Image 1: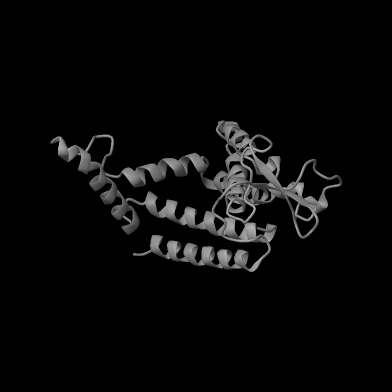
Image 2: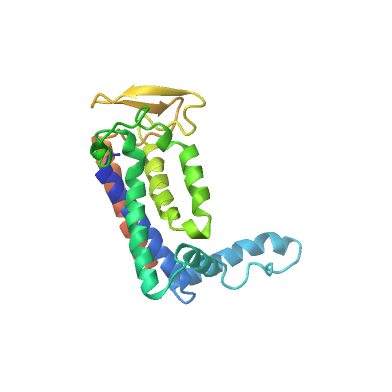
Length: 226
């Protein structure tokens, strides 16, 4: 995908996740009640075979309880500090969405670099090496905000992995191929068969983006149902 497409796609996915997380935190919402009941039912299947009740660790509100914990981890501040934190999170999410394409001189950020990034496009910045390192940094409380940068980069790489050329997750180790793009740039692609839903810059990309936006709209409506 291109930079603008990534921003729209990641924004829609993040908004959907935000709405669902908020709905699941409310133990009285229809979404939370249904989800909690479903989890308790699933947990009761194996235990009913041996004649025991639902395990104590499941509790009465397993889904909404987990949602509250995740919310507190993602948004550790409240009040005015929480608003500042949210703004910073949105900005870092957008930045993380664009950072993997820094190695392309045609990208939204790469065109402003005074120097060219070493290596081919979709190289090291698209690998799991970079994503793992970023996530490890985000685990520390002082650098918790980095998780939003990681989320943007991870979603970017996940979407690129669905393109025709894919991505070499552990480049430069393992097998990979080099693909020459219409712009003349050389890009790293994965070898072997993989799920390819679109060609970057082609019609399939816009069809996929449209389908994603429609799915996110339906998911948000489902989360907000009375």
